[in-house]
Length: 132
Length: 127
Image (cartoon, rainbow over all chains, first blue to last red; front, side, top):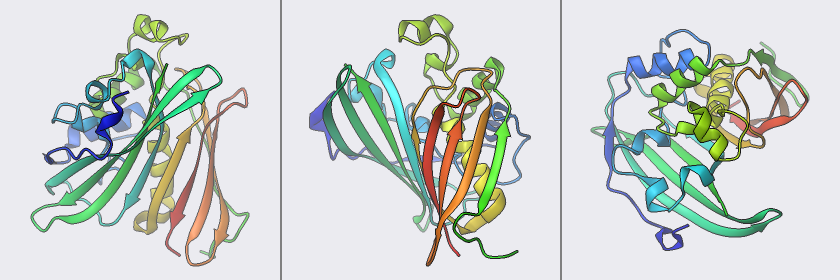
């Protein structure tokens, strides 16, 4: 893993909730189209085509990647028409010796702010693991 | 509705196993480019027996159930994925109140039909 990227802050990108994507997400869960923006609609994955290419930047080949977990904190509701500014930061990187070899852990923090006031709506931390 | 107290079960719900088509829907819906959820050969090259269900689908299930019960009172959700989930594996999702002081803290557990825990976590809710 590229350990010297700890603390890196990516340039912000913008998102608007998309009803079609939300409906697809919920279809995956076996649920109907949502009336409101689903609580976990905003997810780190949406940054990958918007300049936050974690797997490349951190040198985590897909075949060696595991998703260890997620944390969400909600501060304000987001409506379908809201425009959101997203800032991603590589919060921490760590190397550990596991039973089956080395493991590398990355915690990446995303803040989602409602424009134009930049009201903090949501904080997401995703935890990625690279297997040796 | 009575205030939750320690030991109360907030939900104990089983979601049916997701099909491969559902996994593909979820990947599209979350803009997830990882082939491990849809490409059998790729999943095998990564050391798994078949494609993997997305961890965030478990998070989404838990969040939806908590949102249904608590709405905007839900403050935070922390989920750790502890075992892979494969297509067709039902998930039993349980939330139990651990403490109910200034906030309500719920312990979360997700199990597969064979008893393997696939995720655990904590949710914090405003009283």
